[in-house]
Amino acid sequence: MDDTLPWLRGYDYRGIGAVVDELFVMAYDFHHAGNEPGASAPIENVRKTIAYAAGLVDHSKIILGIPFYGYDWVIPYNPRNPGKAITNPDAVNLAMRHQAPIHFSEADQSVYFNYTDENGQNHVVWFSDTRSLFAEVDIVRSTGIGGIGGWQLNFAMPQWPWVYTRYFQTRKA
Image 1 (cartoon, rainbow, N blue to C red):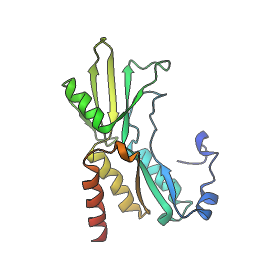
Image 2: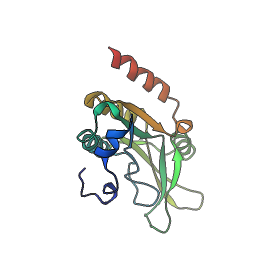
Image 3: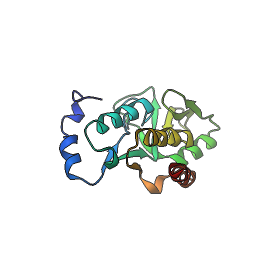
């Protein structure tokens, strides 16, 4: 991440960081409903985002924002047919309903699956699982930033309280 990214030009991280108690950094939607399929929070992009913010803002103020949802796209991708947001539990249920194996992307630290709907259209769904959450928690721990927060809590997967509790138990150790 650097100041040449078009979406970043509107944010003065240093100035914002100087006047806030906490800065919730939305490190997701790198792939979203309106663009090509892929992980919402590819781990390398998340790392770069936090490194950029930490270079400008007091580490203790930074809260890593993580997604509790993913996207379901019709493939091949067509920009006139955007993806649809899907909660992580709904994604798992959809994969089970279509008996679609869920694959893990080591590079992205995210999961995805393919299925064919009732109309014969092919889809790909990308979302997060427990491994994704632990990869993001590891960023919080290794960088010493202030914490982690999810969007949107009522979308959280059932494992989230366990991951959250485990993070804070190991953080105190």
